[in-house]
Length: 88
Image 1 (tube, rainbow, N blue to C red):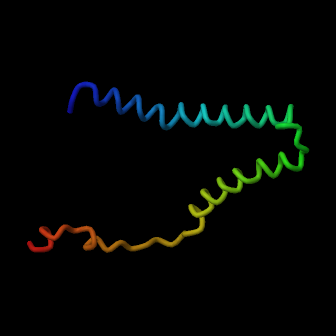
Image 2: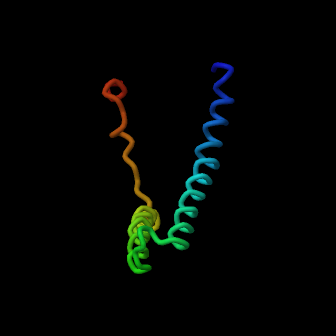
Image 3: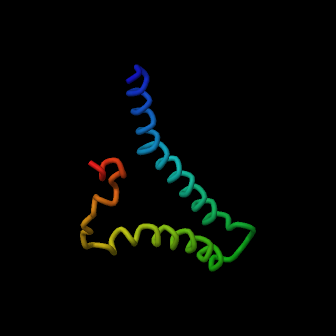
């Protein structure tokens, strides 16, 4: 292991786990606040709601499958063995 790898692993982990989600959250909230205060191109509130429903629906479709499949699946690890290992 090279001397810089632990520092880089910490740096990358911090950015991916904490910094990036915080920045993206601030961007989304800022856009939402701007759309509420000054509707985009003067569209009515109904069209603003439709515009926000589409990405929210996409997030729901992304998160929902995590709670649907609740039974544990038994894995057959022989599928993952290399041909060399199978010959032994």
